[in-house]
Image (cartoon, rainbow, N blue to C red):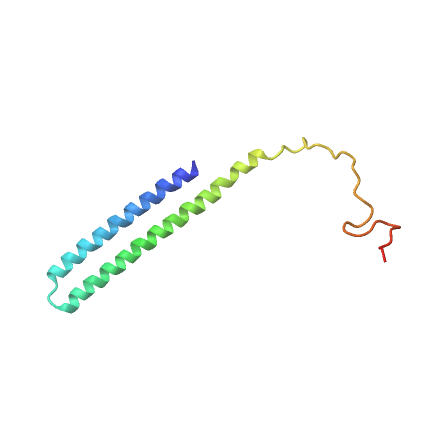
Length: 112
């Protein structure tokens, strides 16, 4: 469920980014039509680049937020699979070995 929700949110963020880019291009075109000098046209172009970069930054920030939301809200399902306190199975009475694991048992000597 969260993956589908994340995909929908990501798609909405991309659509919003494209709308902001189109708006920036239209605004650049309007500014260029009013501009009298080459420098004013360059300023309008640079403003468009800034707005496009901001739109992309917002989209990536939104995608990161969607991933974070998925991770934060996706972990609560694991709690339902844990055993309830007091219902744990008691140990079977198997004792641990008295010698260190990976070593030799007491009284045994290494071959020469």
